Image (cartoon, rainbow, N blue to C red; front, side, top):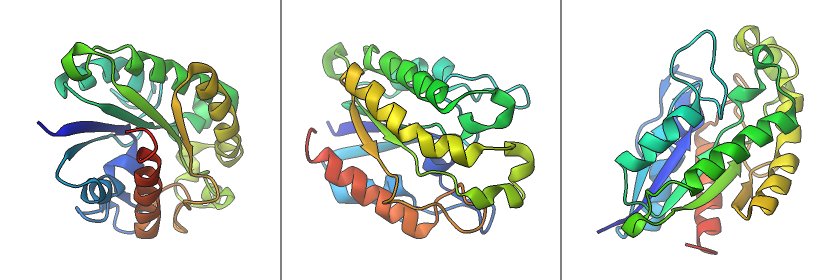
Length: 212
C-alpha cells in the first residue's frame, strides 16, 4: 500500500490560475510536482477548495469552514501517513474581523483536530505539517480581488507566519514557512504562479526528508 499524504488547503492547493481564472493542470500544481518528487511509494491527495478558511463560516458562501470538514475528509482517505495544512490566506478577509494571531489560533485548532483524528495507519494518528502560506502582496487591494478581500489582508498575512511558528512549537507540530522563498503572482498578488508552485513543491519535499 502506498504511503498516503493529504494536502488540505484553499485555492493555492486546488491550483487556481489567476491568468486564466481556471485551474493549473497536472504537472504545474505543487501537489502533483510533490507527488513526482516523492515517487511511486507515495500517493498525494489534493484536498484544495477555493475560499476555504481554517475555522470561520463565510456568510457569503457555503461549506468553506475547514474545521467542519477536516475530520470526514481525513477519514475518507484513511489510512494516511501525513496531513499537510496550508490555510490562512482567506482568513485575512476584512469581513471576518480576525487579527493575524486569531488566524494562527484557528489554524492551530484545526491542526490539533487533524492530529487527533484516527485516520492514520492502523487507526493511529497521522503526522501533521502546517505551512504558513506566502504573504499577500500589498498591491492586491488595487486588483479585482480587493473588493471582496477588504483592507489590511497583506498586513495580516505577513504577520501570520511568526504567530504560527510559535503556536506550532508549543503544539509540537511540524512547521514550514514560505515567506521570502515562495512568492505570490503579480496579477492578484494572492495566488501562486507556475514558478511559485514549483518552489513550494521543492520546499515541501525537502522538509519531508527530515521527518517522513
